[in-house]
Length: 459
Image (tube, rainbow, N blue to C red):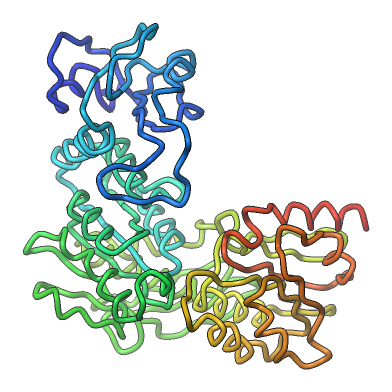
């Protein structure tokens, strides 16, 4: 029987909590009472983030208000800021349950792991790249998009000590956050997938975004490795760098379409490696190269990872396909920015069609600042080969007005009032439609499930 992830007594020692605590096994650490299962440690976080962090999803309620639910679901201990009456399981009381609790436990988790740790960030595609890296044999990786001030420490706390590799994704809501997350993670390899105009509203310029992404190197040891695309500078880092992309030591040599898949031949250091990507697309090759470069930088077997890349599917909301009544719906609605929009449109145009049309339902790209209208207008340059475009949101009006009559399917200002039946009525058997926009445009409103239901009713 494998050793537990933690014990209650061990967590108490790590947090410096006085008293006598049992050696009860802990197999899962969570801040969400709804995810608690038998053997869990429940971390009762404040609804308003501490430690100088900000969140788009701050709650009006605090985690300790759900202590009874966590206990009822099988928690064996909880980290709380004060004793909670009526709770019978051990309570580990700390001043700040985020910094003194979750982050302190995460530091202890990292300190006991001697293997390779790949930390990664980027403007787009970081979660997909993380999934490629997670395919490495016996790797442990961040679940879902656990890449913020609570997701990263939870990843570290739950990471298996016997894993061959840890993969930790890092995102940001404000300047300086990636550096803090990297210093907590202490990666041995730090990867920047790309730098694109995302969060311009907060950061102001591409150069500021570059600095923020490259600050992931602040958590590297002196002998660590920074992995960068061919076109990204990092004068702040004076250590070793591995680059990927055209003209670098990790690059694509060729690809051959095979149905919806691509057979890709690459050069990784001195090795020539061939692998399959299903489905194939330029952005998936970029992400695959990023993952192979990181494994190469970590001194692990890039060829072994390459042999597993064809098993890595598309994550929910990032290009998952389904066909209803002869209409193929591509759900790429989880998020949208100029780079990922261009990638989605390139993938749509690359599809082999035996009939029907290539249709794009495009929603606003948010957080682009004063240049947002220009970025939306710029999408017109990627639409050659797309047969129809339906625009959603006030910013997409700038694109809509540039569309030629035959391509212009419609514009709707408010995504909250957009009826899926309205779009379903524009589609016919043989069409392929991609739905893409910032999270608040389609994902939050569950537009794609509504579109699927409308197409099923129509079929």
